[in-house]
Length: 239
Image (cartoon, rainbow, N blue to C red):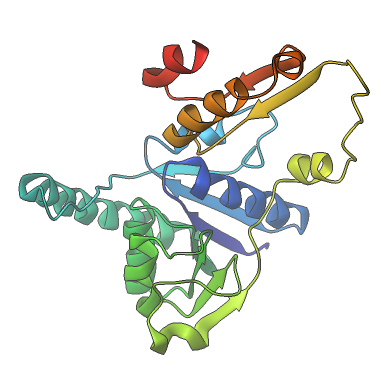
């Protein structure tokens, strides 16, 4: 029987896409990934041609701790405890060989439940500065995979657990990344795709239109822009 791997990830693309790439690789090797996330993360697994296709998906309750908002933090603690109980039951039923956390607060209950269930644990950090959830989990796991040679925010006593693996990349993205950039030639259209953050980073909505607006008119007229942005900045970016 193939080994089962629990993947725990928060509900944003920065956490979910590396988990998806890892899930696809596990399936390629004949292993069984099981995803634990929250209501925000679940739609990522339902996308057409997703690496999560055929993967069991469990949603649990989770919350974000906010020191400046004590009432919100109190509710978050209650939600995290409920998530731990749910995740513990899920993990006990699947009997996984390993639990891998990809960050985000929804990963906290699943990884804490794995600890109490006696399941070996690994976290992956996508950023050059470790996120809050992973920083809290770091002393409580056996291994830490990082995307950069140096990751700020890790406690010195946890450095011995670190292995630099890079950031898992989906095969479709790796395929496009390996293709040469086509020379548009003089006077041809230039197609520009702008992405930032899983929902569109606000800073990109500020700097990209301004930067394009500063180009010479002849060059600016050749550019076709498709930009991912937040709903509240849509009209600003479009203008």
